[in-house]
Each structure stands twice: as structure tokens, then as C-alpha cells.
Image: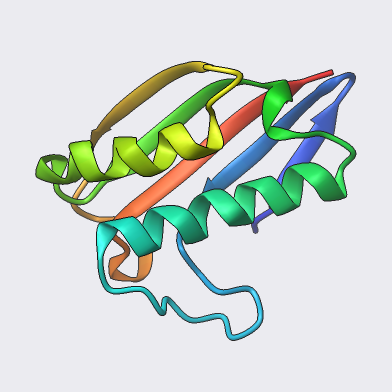
Length: 110
């Protein structure tokens, strides 16, 4: 019972993305930097498939298994949201599916 994204009018709601490699279905990166890149790349690809871009994102919610990873995660996040800086919540949640270190969801508006 899962949708990667739902389009409602001009708003795209992208479900939380953990760092699964879409080709293998596995979490391959073992550190927060690699996992953050994979999660955000997955989001970028979902947005683009729906005709949106990272610049259309207005809100993100970020879950970190360890809030001590915030600085490293934030450095990666800033690479993806350098032009557009959406509203964001970022908090710890130690029960992220499949033992992931990060999960990110976004809302985008055209």
C-alpha cells in the first residue's frame, strides 16, 4: 500500500524516500553522506518523472536515524537545494525502514 508520489492539482506529494538503489532495491551506501545522496537523487528522479524539479519543492521532512549526523546530512542537502531553499523539518527517528540512516519526503508545487 505505497505510492512513490501523488499528484493533487498542481501539488506533488513525494513519499518518504530511503536510500534504496532503484536498480538493485538495496541500500548500498553505509554512511550518512552516501545515503543522503541516494535518497535525494531518488527524490529528484521522482520529481522529474512527474514533470517537476527540485526548484518546485516547497517543503521537506527529513528523518535521521542519528541526529548527530545532521551536519553531514545538511552538507549534502545543500547541494540539492542550493537555489531553492524549501521550508524544512529535520528530526531524529531511529526506526527508519530497512535500517536506513535517512528518509526524506517532499512536497512540490508548480
